[in-house]
Length: 206
Image (tube, rainbow, N blue to C red; front, side):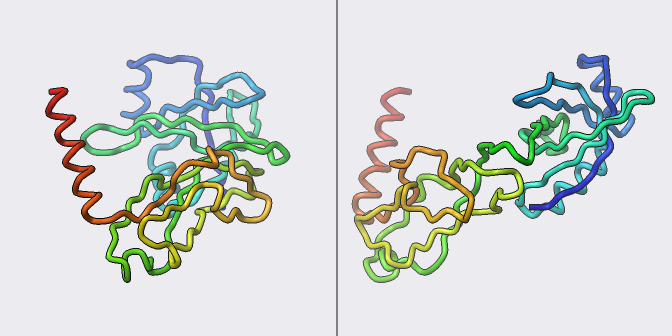
């Protein structure tokens, strides 16, 4: 996991007008909240934040936020919880930081990445149906994995892999429904039938 430091200015004013002025000045409205301390409204450098996020390549980033409030300066550790973006240009408009502590486990969403050539597709000529592309895990901040690797080589048609079957890295525990289906290999005929039934149901509701 990548760790970076970034300055953040504590702000006392809020509202759409304030947020608009911050963006025009090159800042990004933000909030820091967590399980212990009260929420704090912040402003961070929009260009710097965007640059950091683009360099992450999908990895989680642990921010050391240097909070400045007048002459007072403190540091808080945080992960990005949510980024609100512009509907047209995709630029960040607001960011939620979630405060973390290095000795306190937390739940995070981690992507599941497939590995290998599936026999159910290559040999059985089935269709791969990916149900879940990520799962929730529980771990300390410095143990957050970039991804969970799922070997699908031996998966055959008519079979599925569930969350409980995923191999977790050291010091990481599954914090999701263990019976949740991650991936299944279905027959082409069954897939076509299910899609037809779904379309028919949608037309009926319409």
